[in-house]
Image (tube, rainbow over all chains, first blue to last red):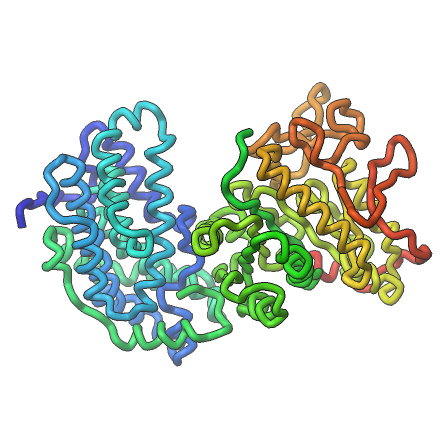
Length: 260
Length: 302
């Protein structure tokens, strides 16, 4: 490990001149309305329900993901952010290939890896677009590192630009700190499930909001645990074989609302 | 516009059950010998449409891809096109060079139209069985899609709908933009449809086609002095009324900036007009059905 990215003490922005932009970007990345393909995913909820989960299991399902796959994803995004920033500074540490390989090694299900490709492509498309036609001022301010960040991600073939790796690169470009990156990644995991729930179950749509808030301690613990990770080897390997099996079954289903 | 090097992307929208998949099947059956095609389907709950098309044997099954829309068919073609665009790009990469990629929306309501970032042009499909009045309900797809198809005209006598009237009303609602009254049992109407698509492929390849967004909004005006308009990010973004000298109903319905590709070429069906103020059009002059009372009107206009 040649570089150690300092861990920001708060969720606040880390880049002075881009502080306001980074603060706004944190909200944008957490917003389900960001058009990067999130609406087609249920965070494994539809596969789980088809395999026997019911509504009473959902709060535990959220925290189970935070303890396992969401943790691996968030740590990967944090490592990707640090590596992309390092590349942007001209002092590269880890290639996108190394980060993607570390994530894939901890994500043994090909179905789950495949499901992470689509949002990864959406995030890459957004990142490339922001660089291509952002406001001139912003482009001037970020042209150097921004282009290097995209170039770092684009070393990967398209099919390996998995969501956590792409999210880390986008977070680097937008100036998010490592804690904010981890939080956005984990929050998106929780809300993907929570938002899909009323579409799949006979629920009051307000119920999942409470579940999301109820997951606050586990989410905060996850952020604390992964925000300081900078080396791909240190990404937690906490696979969830049961979730993987549900995903595998779902991929063969001919009746589904969600991609995964 | 410069000549295009990527395939022409054509969206097929319209309510559930109006025949979008069948229309795509028709296009594949008639065009796949001369053009290299790909199809993306947006099923709501199953991959039924993709399976039906694959089973129909009109196209290599590998060229038909299904996209899940997370119960949001409208979102998937308009607000967040990520999954569809990925599928289109994959098809284009896997089977390069393609001439035409057809994107079938999941059946949705009358306000669902494709983003111009996803398709170059779009067909909006209604059918006589959905009710003769649906075309009068209007909406961006009916009024401003590049082509309106009134489908299943062979069923008109059975559902008490005057197909010729429905077609005329569609033409009226569209300020002269083209309408095809289609029946898969009527070869002339199928020819008209295929001819329109072929002309659009050619216009796109030549760089003569500018995507026009039908938009989710109805045309409106901001004051008495401003003409009605619709908002769209591409092209001039205006829909022009019949009094507009630039795009009156005597002009080809498709705006390409050169006035040359909007006609319906209809190889077997002679294009004709009934008067100076009616656009050239294509249809069969079958026996008129006199009643226009539609049972279950609006059943599909959800």
